[in-house]
Amino acid sequence: MDEIERRVVAALDATGAAYELIECDPDLADTAAFCAHYGYPESQSANTIVVASRKPEGHNAACVVLATTRLDVNKRVRTRLGVRKVSFASPEMSAELTGMLMGGVTAFGLPADLPLWVDARVMEPDWIILGGGSRSLKLKLDPEALLTVGGEVVEDLAVPLA
Image (cartoon, rainbow, N blue to C red):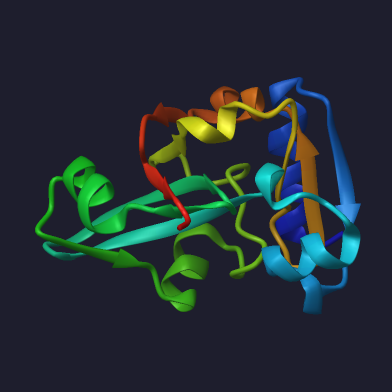
């Protein structure tokens, strides 16, 4: 287990929530490939996406959405950040802000000053799968655990895929 994975597990342990660690091939870390290969439903798979403002710069957030939805960056996220322009953080910026690589970013072990917004649909399943801090690890847990690390549930943070 690497340093980031240890930080994620420590953050999870601090919540008291039950969870399962799932090791995966780093080449299969992207959600669609992971679900297809390991047999998990996309409807219970969540992605943690880091967003960054462009005008003005310096406003960031981590957003958790189901794989069956698309983050509403241009309306919902932009409005919540109170900025004119926002986009997905680049892989480099995401790593700088979280210490985690794309495909492994998770809501656990994030810096305290990074807001964590959770689409309300994520809270519906009994359990979800999400990144474990690296491309080699996934987490299976009750979505309620997201609230224990400061997650704020937001209605319509994402929109269903067509």
